[in-house]
Each structure stands twice: as C-alpha cells, then as structure tokens.
Amino acid sequence: MKHKFNVVKVGSTTVGGGPFSVWAGPCSVESQEQFSLTARKVKEQGGAGLRGGLYKLRTDPRAFQGLGREAFEFVRAVKKDVGLPFVSEITDARQIGDFLDVVDAFQVGSRNMHNYALLKELSQIDKPILLKRGFAATFKEWMLAVDYLAKGGNEKIILCERGIRTFETATRNTFDINAIALTKQETPFPILADPSHGTGIAALVTPIALAAAAAGADGLLVEVHPNPPEAKSDGYQSLNFAQFEDLMHKLPKVLTALDRKMATV
Ligand code: PEP
Ligand code: MN
Image (tube, rainbow, N blue to C red; front, side, top):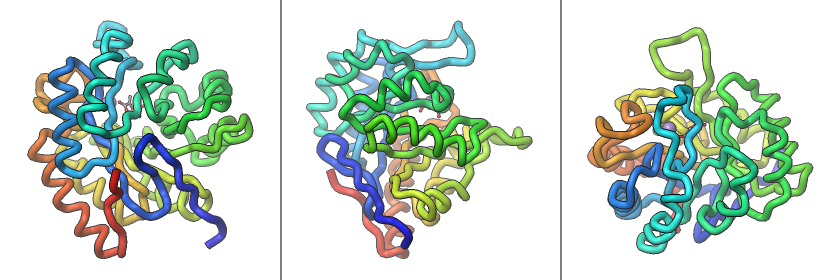
C-alpha cells in the first residue's frame, strides 16, 4: 500500500477506511412527504446518509430548478427524525452561509467540478466536500480539482464517480469502473460510486452498484424515489423502494466475499 486511506467524518458517520456507506435519497427534494418517506426507507434499509437536491442545475431552463430555501426547515426536521446526515449540491458560492446549517457535506456536481472559484470558496470551510467527477473530465483533471480544495486547506474530500460522456449513447453516461480502482491505487481519498447518473437506467443501477463495491468503492450515492414515474427530476434512473430493498439485500453478500462490511451510522 503506497498511502494511508483517509476517513472523512460526516455528521454522525464516517466515509472511507473500510466500511461501505450507502448515501441514498431523491434526485430532488420535492416535498416534505416525499423526502420524509424516502428518508425513512433509507434508514430502515441500513443507509448511512441521505442525499437530495435543493438547488438543481438543469440542462433545460424550463425544468424544475429545486425548492431551494423553501425546503430547508423540513429537511432539518426529516434529518432529525431519521438521525442520518445529509448531503446536497451547492450550485453557487452565495449559498454557503445558508447551507452550513442544513447539510453535513457539500456536494459539488459534475457541472461544477471545473468551477475553480467555487472550489476555492469551499476550500475555506470546515465541512466535507463530495466532489463529483466532471462528465468530460479526465482522472488527472479531477485530481487537480481535488488540489484546489486540499491546497486551499480543506482535506475532508470524498470523491464520486458518476459516469463520463463517451461515444456510447445507449446509456446516459458510461460508468468508469477503472476510476474506482485507480482512486484506491493512487489516492488516499474515499470514493463513492453513483450508478444512478452513471447509467441513467434504474434497472442497471443495482448491477453497477455491486460491481463498484467489488472494485473497491467506499460506498454509493444512489437515487431513490417513492414513485419514480412522478419524479420532478431523474425518475427514469431512480430506484423505487422495492428496487432499493433488493440492492440493500444484495450488497452485503458482495461485501462479505471481500471481507468488508456495511457502514453504521
Ligand atoms: C445529482 O446528484 O442529482 C446530480 C445532479 O449529479 P451530477 O452532478 O453528477 O450530474
Ligand atoms: Mn439526479
């Protein structure tokens, strides 16, 4: 082993260093009911953390842009109810102050991996950063984005492979499983796999999640929705509750084969 692996504390849990952490929730937080139902399912199934978009960077400006501040209060209530930490994407440095009271980790999305002004601001704060890979970024470019955070003073970095754009159009993105194993080989940082954006097809999420676990990922960031066909974003790639239960049933079997365990909160 060339280096020690970082363990990043996020709220009441940790990411990295062996245990496998499943972070799950809707693409977008849509209502208190939708978020609360999902959060309870994630907790019941042994998830380590919640995800949910509050500010959405949508390709189509007419698409749902997220509830923003409207959701902050009920998100805090749901977090307290289930007792799980929460990660959400920050899309603009001006959101940092407000976000500090709501999130346990700041997600930098694929579209913002190259937003060095945002990375510089986030390097100054004392909270973990979940840094997604840009959908057209090389591994090297991604690691240079890591340097913006680390050299600025924030080393609480969790990486997330979410698929890259290739010539293949049968799936939304091409999940780069090499990047999982390469991260473990070359860096001390924990890495989550996002098979939801990595495939764009709900039926492919579980097989790719299991493959990522086998390749050494430290956990998952996965989209789950109580009623995916009605989701305001990314419904086609969101697991319904039965599919999520199936994933959570299969994961420990793959982990056991590799002498690994699920993370606890
Ligand atoms: C998301 O996690 O919902 C998201 C927008 O992801 P990405 O930045 O990887 O597209
Ligand atoms: Mn999404």
